[in-house]
Length: 110
Image (cartoon, rainbow, N blue to C red; front, side, top):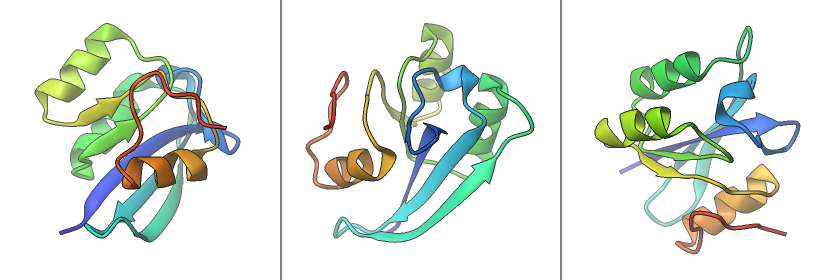
């Protein structure tokens, strides 16, 4: 089974604010912890609503992000999306740590 992971970006880093990101990395990951496919999605402007809508329509299972409003966090978790927030680091490095099962809320990934 493939897991879809979404990471709002600022350049090549996890975006410091979920609602201010205009780029999103979407990764399809295998149960073995490998990235099968990656896609960079560009939004027309920053919007927490657009990112949430994209997560729902794309059937995302996990979102890794920096700061996120409590209301948005609650909505996503209510929709059964695993949200790992307050994460800082390069998106590719953060994704690898997530796939190894070692990424936690508040991690600063060098």
